[in-house]
Image (tube, rainbow, N blue to C red; front, side, top):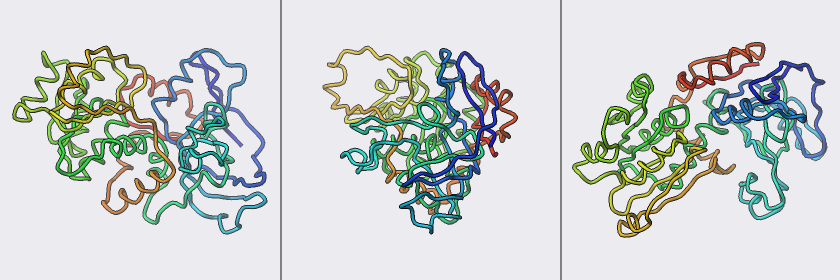
Length: 336
């Protein structure tokens, strides 16, 4: 089979491997879509690695082979994939949080072979039947990017009565805008890119703000919320200024969540203690939350496919990541 391998320092190769086989408790999945995630860039740009693995961690596909102890009914079934592999036995794994396995977890595309390939092997406990009506592109997005947005909105306990400020309108932030709007919330979308703000409006944003065009982001948020601020905020860009502004834009009793990687925040606790602020980071989502997200997307007719602006073949690996590194386009996907 053909696959993309990251070696670090912006080097990738397109290589041939033997088709994988399934051991006990495993299935082989023919990859129908493998989304490109912003976190891929950490490995792509990172230091050289002698033990590089196949890249990618947003797969969806069809089961084509099953190992011992796996029901034959899986063969031929379209599936979603939770891209972390834990021990399967600890309390976190049993709750569907394999990435928090107490005995150590591996992650597709980082410490286990990834999905930028024609086939991938995964434990059967990591897969879910793809609901009728979902496309492979949508299922791939839910496995990480859109799923990360959903996990954060659930941690925020978002309701239709909320107004939420979403900082960053890259693929995760735009997915959050799309999902929050589908849940009935009013979304204030923030980004320094006018084109991304335009997409946010297309995806249901109630208001948009360009942080580079205002003196104070928090004041700009209050200007459109009758001076109060928002009940919820979500930071997806990883920018430190945005992470702090997400706190400062909250109303009394507000909730903030951060999913963007790389930011640093310094603050005086007193500024937020007397506002009764609740602050929670959020990291991807559980297997059960993946299923919930897929069902909401299907039931509410959320067009997750619209997030994808670029579709690539595996042979386009270099061109695809050269564009992704500019972080100015929408979401990309490999269709092997």
